[in-house]
Length: 218
Image 1 (cartoon, rainbow, N blue to C red):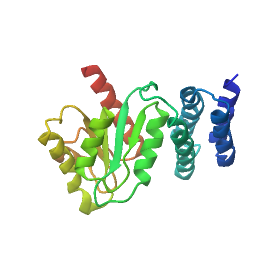
Image 2: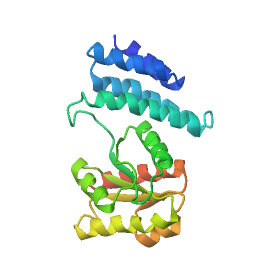
Image 3: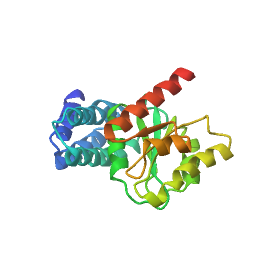
């Protein structure tokens, strides 16, 4: 019975119909539909379609950003109804922009694509000090930390995250990858990051590879 509603949710996402998606989200809540089922079979399936369309070149960054924002707004409402730990995901990633940098477009695009790969993503926002990355990684029990730096002056903050992990004896507990306009592959290697994404597709591919390697190492 609910599958018809889930199909409508997917269609609203792929048609970028924000008003319809909001109304369908209201229906999920009003009809007492299992929010986990709605998220997984409606919203996650819809954003996966968007990710596939982006990777095939059928839609572009503005559409990807619009879909990501729409889905994030609806899913945030539904997640408040979900008992902690009841959603099954392939992995959990923490994403944030380093201290001194308030840019979030690149970070948000990576989050949208990771979500389409059935990963749970914790977004800690922008202007985040190293301690916040580590504190929230511990609190949320993530597998991978992703840090973005778009301003050259904020690049040293990436190294501070690794130093904070080492100071607490946690360096081997989390995978750590970096990205952003100010970051290069050489810099990532220099600071000791586990991975680096030069663009959106590479960032997602590297994140998936790191998660798979971590899973295989358990």
